[in-house]
Length: 109
Length: 431
Image (cartoon, rainbow over all chains, first blue to last red; front, side, top):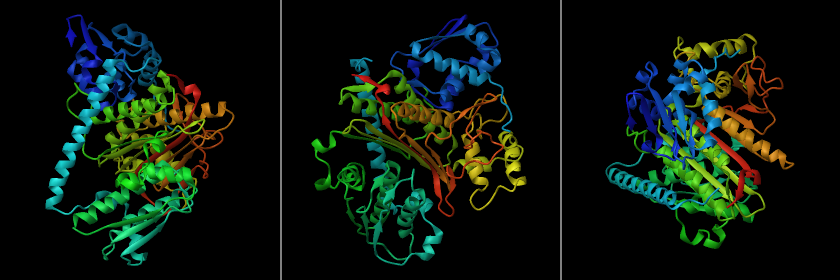
């Protein structure tokens, strides 16, 4: 972990790989980097996805960042604070996960 | 896509070595415990059928005739009946000495059915032998040579390591099997490393890919992500919701034909999908979300012997944003089944592009069997992913009973997900 006062850097290679799965693990990584605190300050967060990654499951991603996305209230505000560095192939997945976290839950019927 | 680099290969081998080591240590520990107390199989306890217990004749040696269509996808009732029958034999007052499993009349078979049959037989053998009794196992292969090869490669023959019946290297070269069973490992607290589930998913994807590489092709990066997403989400779901940490992932790829026939099955023992939702307290957020739906079916008089509340709850569990873990409307859980259905729908779509549709998937949870063959699809309704199994994809209407079936008194104590599809050229590329 390389963190400065202005930036928290999360390199996923420090958390296993090439598969990142599981809500609990995502939440624990979130705790480790104290992202709850980061959400209420001006700190930027850089997340590095290793080149050899097979997948980042939605459960892991939303465990790690779901709260931050909802606190940011919009995709733009979230991406203004959180930046992702890694294979482009994951961009659409990340966009999809952000939308899921933000979408308003409607009644089942 | 490039071949595995040296460092990727190194990491893969390292991971594999670690898993093997963990498995070996575990087996030693189990053996030590076994020496002290006879083994009582939790799986057999769950699978045994009290009704059969009263009906079955007390014989020491049993003949089991496998049905023509031995498949959890296409013939769940007969298939489950056989499995439950086997488990129940060990619970009769009389001490069973052996069984003969007759596959002779089998014309089609699926991976889930054969895998769960094997698991049941292995548990029987382990339990009986732990009481210092002998257990004799006989069997007859199917007439069809492809099915015979399948049984020899994946079935009891393989698991019991009956050397003279195993496939030769030449026979095995086009048939690739991946099996990983977890009954011991829980999610680790150590977030610096991959846990057993993540390693299993990575190994599974590597396995499927290496099978294709031997045929001059490999998974496209997008297909690799889809496969890892699908398996990862399902196992994560199992870990999050089950009361028993007992799950298996089995994959099978037959490279011998023009299309690469692929089957994946993931199953677990423990809470069914409906039990998880039914056990929620009345004031739970998710309970409140699903209550109007139960109310609607109640008031409309739709519940019957063929369609009960458990079937309905299993259907509800498939809908997007539905999870027993959601405690308020801000939470984003309930995507696991969506990923799974999405994976199937993409596989199915690609099959149709080739002029025919042969992809199928089934979910069996408790007594509810749900069939996916592409006839009904999941789509976004007011921002929620919905699959209602009716023409209008409307949860206000009854689902099609051809696709959601209640199996009556046949009950699987957990959930089986079974998917069968041919790997298409669009999912692979030249290695």
